[in-house]
Image (cartoon, rainbow, N blue to C red):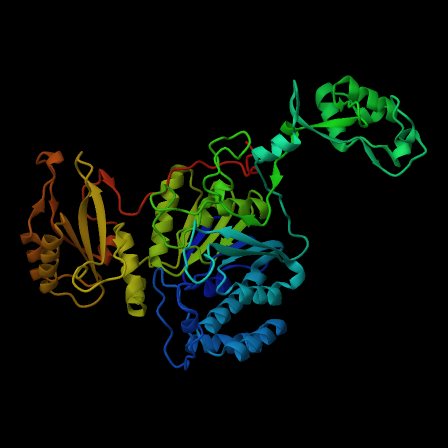
Length: 582
């Protein structure tokens, strides 16, 4: 992983990818947010299954794990080949839970945690993000794999404003378990801003240098050297203490004078500090030293990360900021939101990445979804590996990286997606839904969500574009076929265009179109945007083969401003400094 390193985005099962492509002890930091259907009822999750059904097809946004043949095989693999403590735990969980969705989820997570432990460096850290439905079981798995002594924190993150459940307290938090592989793992402490009330209470004094608080100029215990002698009429021995200037004072004196305070005898050091105004005198107490607010690094982050709406004015020095605003959950309409249901705010990942890695370190997200982890890793100058099992996520991540970083994007490669016709045919044979997502990505189309009979028939994806100054988007409909194709399918697409009032229709096919299909597409005519004043027109129905798309052919569409995937805001890379306290 030297100078030739390229960041990597893998399509595939993260278990297979980690086993085949990621070396032992090569990763510095792993963040994972494994999908889990927390909206399912508890009874459904714990319903017994007979284990004979084939493995469920994983699709975008579907976060079920089911007890099936794959789960059964994985369970036996962990029991027979996994670490003893994990095998013992999984058997105990099986005796308690039985064969159900929850047990399938824990089994699938157990075998992945084994691989995660393998690829982490001895100095590595892992952050596992989950919700209360399964968090208590997942912590047991983490203890079994990483050891209870390597548990560091249970971080509570506020995921939404409120949840008005009439039968319980509103469930508004999620959990992030923070473990290290060994005690060698670094912890780069992050700090946040001070609250205004804290500053006004404790930094209530002020001079020409700014606000300051009073701190003790003495330490506990009597000493018989210079540190125990009276100074300016004050005898520390009478109070059972001795003079002990804090290390802060040595640094501050050096900053103010350029002189080394340590070279002077102790009582003379106190004189020197007084001469530059670092001693505070009181008529009723011993002298204290001044600790200036401007020199304080901020308050260390704790293990509750909860944005508090309505707290403007509470942050010292920034009247518009709110408490924990950097980890605020994403609401509809926010620039950062890309429409991915499990998307986490970048500020959340920024805290994690800055805490447990430095520039140049390698960050892995084995369930990378819409790519928040790798986008933040890229911005903070870390190397990264992302893995996802849906082509929809891969396409979304590629767009996000390009929109966010443009020409500043570090070199990266996409691995596991079809690069030729043969591999495209293999994907279609293996999984027609993933083939569909992949094919839509070739023309930058967004897939239709859950298909409903009637409204979405004949539509696999869509592209929005603008070709005038009205601000109203125009629409292209995309249909993807991996099997036999006929002229009737082109006629159906023409009917969909009329029904949906769409300007252009794209018919993407793995097979070669017939001559009648080509003639039917040509008969649909052309779309002529007024902005081109008759100088450019676009076929209303366009047939594109997978072979042509792989060879570089493009969908003919007005490209003034394509707006299919919601664009991520552009951002520049920056130094991995600590959280600002301003």
